[in-house]
Length: 229
Image (cartoon, rainbow, N blue to C red; front, side):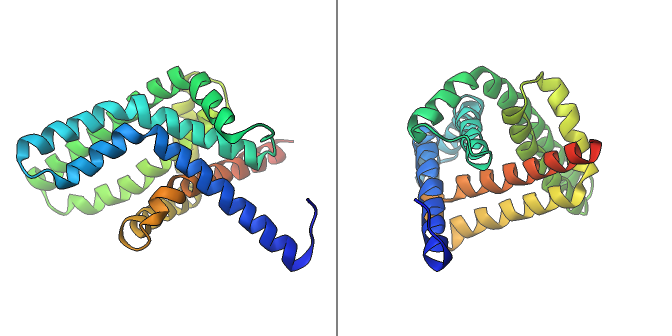
């Protein structure tokens, strides 16, 4: 359907809204076990239940959250590169299956990095000096950006994870303003989703983060390729 002017704008806008909300809903469905545990965590009252639920969520992250998130990023890649010709559900499931092993390994490595970060935070802030919390807030920004860059990189390139991690370290700190912007956008969207417009969690939170993250990564990739040529 070809439209111009105001009608064309609203048609394109509504099409994007439908795509983003549908992809986000699929992502939520694929993460249902984690979603259920998180909801249960909110209503749990005793410490033992909190610990059990928390550990269960952490264990499931590499096996459920990361495969579904990489599949969501793959869908955003297809949309941005105009390759989305098949059914969204079939395409999502295909990306999920094809990238499952890679995403589990990628998620496991990133989870280890995050666990080390949390342990270091509690040690330096509570055992050494409380002022370290400002250092860790700065590190948190770039760790979020690093995580999103890793997902974008591994969904765009088929390469060894160790090599991708090395490349992404360069991207994260070689382009600090881009990384900072992606992380701040993510923080703001998550805050808005949980505290202002909770329906964003169901319809837009994940898909918008993946859209902005991969769009930024792809823009940088095109810029580097163009410059090298």
